[in-house]
Structure formats: C-alpha cells, structure tokens
Image 1 (cartoon, rainbow, N blue to C red):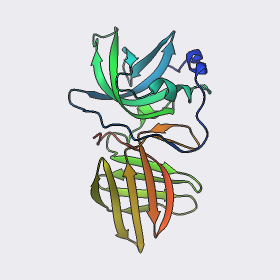
Image 2: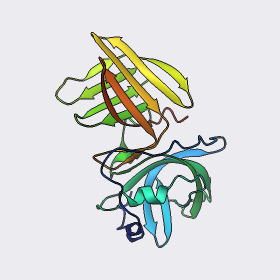
Image 3: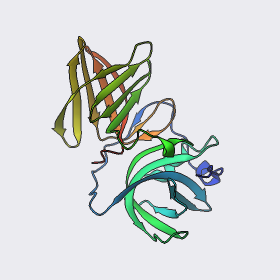
Length: 223
C-alpha cells in the first residue's frame, strides 16, 4: 500500500478533542447486498479515495450512509502516515486498474496505520476493545478472550455472550477468582490517545471496577 499523501483537503475540518467522544447512536444500516473491506484512505483533489488492502483498484467514496467519514479522516490527517479504514458499502467499477466507486453505509474503524492491512490476527478476531488510564485491551476470538492490563499479566478466559437488544451485548466470565464483564454498545467512539474512530463503545468491569473505552468487530464478525 502506498503511503498517504498530505491531505490538504482535510485541513478545512477541525480536529476532534483529545478525549473519548461518544456521538449520538447511529441508526443500524441494512447490510444486505453490501461488502465489507479494509484498506487505505487518501484524498486526491476534492475526492476521498479508498484502496482495498493488497489491491491496485481505487474507489471514490460516496458517503451515502451519513457516516461523516471525511470529518473522521480529517481528525487523523495531522501526521504523516496512511489512514486505514474498515468499512462496508456497495462497490461498483470492479475492472482491474480502473477507478470505481463505493456507496458507503457502515464505518467500523478509521486509524493512522501503515501495518493494519498486514494484521495476521484480524480474520480470526471477533472483537477488539481498548481503553486508557490505566491502559487495557481485550481481544476476543471463538476460543476465548484475553484481557491485558497495564502492570498485570494477561488473563485468558472463556466467556459467555448475552444479547441485550438494539445491538448491545456483553461478554462475561467467572474464572481465576475474577469476575470480568465487557459491555458493548453500537455508538461511535473516539480513542482518547490515538484519535482513532471505532464504531462501538466498551465498558470493562473487573471485580466491580469500571473502565471505559472503544471497540470494533474483527474480521470474523460484522453484524
């Protein structure tokens, strides 16, 4: 993937504040007939282009789903490096080497990254969540979940998922004398440190102690 050029277009938009920001919960789009892809975002003239991972084709982004992708990308354009995006939409113009278009409906994640396309764990990952102060991260696969917390050894445990409704769910476990819960809601979230966008908020509860953060689906789940 080529490095992203300086996105002069994005300078027209204000940066988001450096804190976790939760926007109004978006309406859940219909995913029927849409394709999910990961790749790189760049700006060329007045267009925002999406290039899928390991692909030479480019797609002009039409934000038909009202995802505010241009503003989200603008908030991350202040430093050099590629902008990685995980999105879903209706792709057209698929001939090799041609420029097509994508009618964007769902935005899962946008972040500064030059290596996200090469992530070996993405396809098997169900969910990733993370937060700060102190730092924590949760990686969830079909085999279990691994909780990493600053200053503590990783905790790998099985879990039970409970659907709450309206796209909300929680993951629970009672193992190794620890009661762990991860509550997830479909509400876009801005990471307080990296500035990356994720499409869900997360709340980690360990033995009654609560920490908040952001979450996004991995490659093995995209509802």
